[in-house]
Amino acid sequence: MLANCSTWREMPSDDEGTIDPAQLTLRPFSASDDAEVTSWFPDAGALRFFAGRRLTWPLDSEQWASIRADPATRAWTAVLGDDPTPVGHAEMVDEPGGLVQFTLLAIAPSLRGQHLGKEVVGQMVEKAREGGYRLVYLFVHPDNATAIRGYRSHGFEPAEELDSAHGLRLELRLGGA
Ligand SMILES: CC(C)(COP(=O)(O)OP(=O)(O)OC[C@H]1O[C@@H](n2cnc3c(N)ncnc32)[C@H](O)[C@@H]1OP(=O)(O)O)[C@@H](O)C(=O)NCCC(=O)NCCS
Image (cartoon, rainbow, N blue to C red; front, top):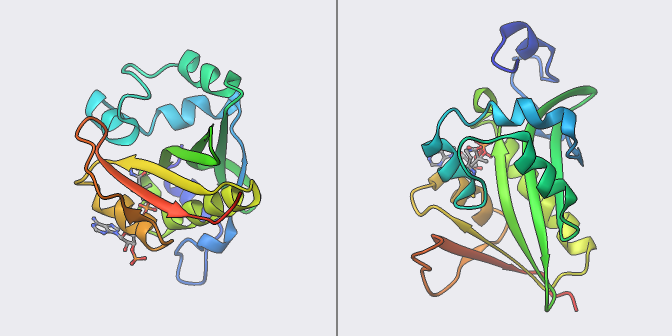
């Protein structure tokens, strides 16, 4: 498990033992990741903060399987270096009109606050850019300062209206077709 100290030491790091975000890559989310990613959300509140209404408590493999089966959704697992252990999860959903929504984003609890979330957002934006999308948008809980800061550092701006049902809407224009 990720919180295990020996696993921590195996993570790619610099001489001071901190994680290097440059080691992070995204690979397709697979069924073998389900248990680890599920373990990051210990209760209904944590899941709601992460996923809004997209996932329901209790989280199970059926919900992850339906995300993988959805042709409009692309889901990734973040890993560090050669270690296959998931350290992050991210998803985007294709929408009409050149839009794409970033729907889920999470970093393993023991690794938060080390700029991995910011790195995942950057790589997701790059994927959206390569996909030719015109605009990326997402909803975030207005109290989720870490997530909002990570998105804003990549150029996301709050949309003018607060959607009270979904939270704060952030947008990034990519200039695609
Ligand atoms: C939100 C989440 C993905 C961010 O990932 P992370 O790796 O912890 O965040 P980062 O280390 O990349 O930090 C991003 C920015 O927030 C800042 N930050 C970190 N903790 C913070 C806090 N408690 N308050 C405000 N800013 C904070 C960081 O310093 C960084 O800004 P900087 O580059 O200017 O220094 C992660 O915390 C998480 O998985 N949370 C639970 C699930 C969730 O809320 N998902 C988002 C749904 S939209």
